[in-house]
Image (cartoon, rainbow, N blue to C red; front, side):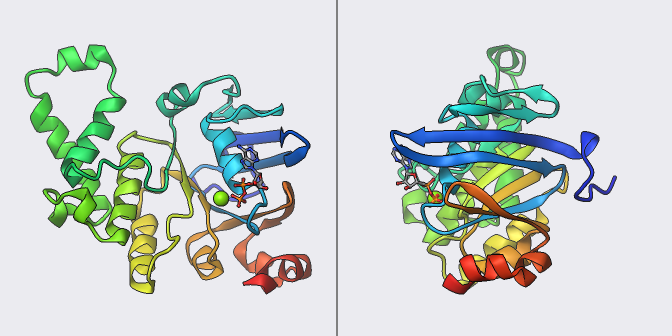
Length: 256
Ligand SMILES: Nc1ncnc2c1ncn2[C@@H]1O[C@H](COP(=O)(O)OP(=O)(O)O)[C@@H](O)[C@H]1O
Ligand SMILES: [Mg+2]
């Protein structure tokens, strides 16, 4: 089913409802509401300090909001901790912090796969688990363009490949919703192009919210844009409408 914007109900994966968060006197998230639709490639943009990463931290369960609710597939998950959200189907990327640099690409992906297996599954699948795990890891490595680097030590990989591996670790958690925080940050043009094609080729069953600074990337990869400014939503619409909006252009795009 095509899930065009404006439709709710079946189409909504995440219903972000009036979220607010302050750090002391600094109100970083101010009544933020939006929908992430099924299969969306939804870009979250805004200047530095707008509150984008804070919003991700709230959605992934790292931070509790002061008020507001997060509804995932119709269930209120606001009180769920990070791992309960992962098990429900929401996974996010971390920039570098969760890679094991001394281990191989394959080892990193297998470890991520193991973290989301329940003890019961472990016992039942003990006999052929190693083979099955490896096969699953290879499928994931292939999706992120790392199938020829399975045995390489992660610390020896190029920067762009390490960032590709971060996407693999998110995929290993079998998400329905992926939160990608600036997946192309710091990349060369060639690396950016590879990352974009990886994201483009991910299953359309996945709903992706992507924080992105590079407006070329936003226009290329997304079909919906939310602009956050000073903790509030400044604009929501298609990338084409964002480009046309005087408000977005004057407040944000002109900074690029
Ligand atoms: N844990 C924290 N404690 C205090 N202030 C924070 C914390 N995390 C973020 N901030 C502040 O909140 C604002 C928004 O930060 P952030 O969400 O990282 O913005 P963005 O990702 O859009 O650049 C910034 O002013 C930042 O300094
Ligand atoms: Mg940020």
